[in-house]
Image (cartoon, rainbow, N blue to C red; front, side, top):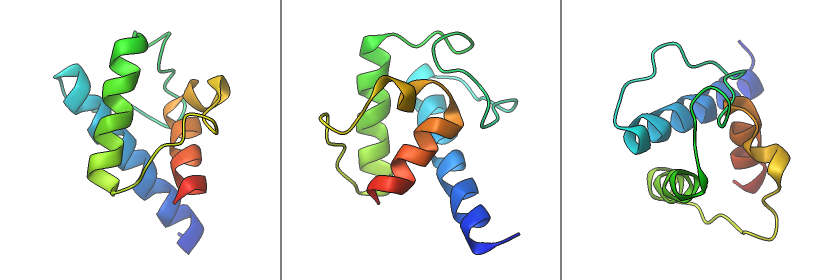
Length: 86
């Protein structure tokens, strides 16, 4: 596994862990392709909780101006956004 792939997987793992925390259940079947709204049924409140959990766990700050809807489509797209702002 390349360093970039390992780093990408690290962010996917962080997103899944934050999702598990917000949703209050383990997500053993979550993959980068898992859709946040369609499959995990997130709403605006849970998205805010998810972003705060990611900020806390990864010690980063999400800029609402840079966050776009496509960043919230899947676990992988959110992980990619997190990698970009790190």
